[in-house]
Amino acid sequence: MKKFNIRDFYSEVKEELSKVNWPTRAATISTSLVVLVVVGMIAVYLGVVDLVVSRLASIIMG
Image (cartoon, rainbow, N blue to C red):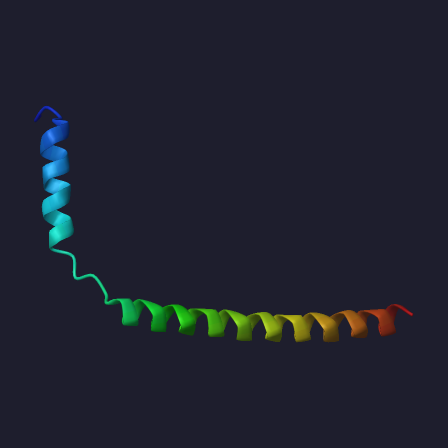
């Protein structure tokens, strides 16, 4: 078993990170906006469903 060497570890991490295809700033912003819009839509949907179910429950329980 190879002995752990912190310098080798960090040099390998640096080498692997240089291979990563990082997104552009514009791509990051646009995908973040899509995520925020979808989360907002889901929040509104769940809020409406919660309101309807709570009103139905209050009507049924009197």
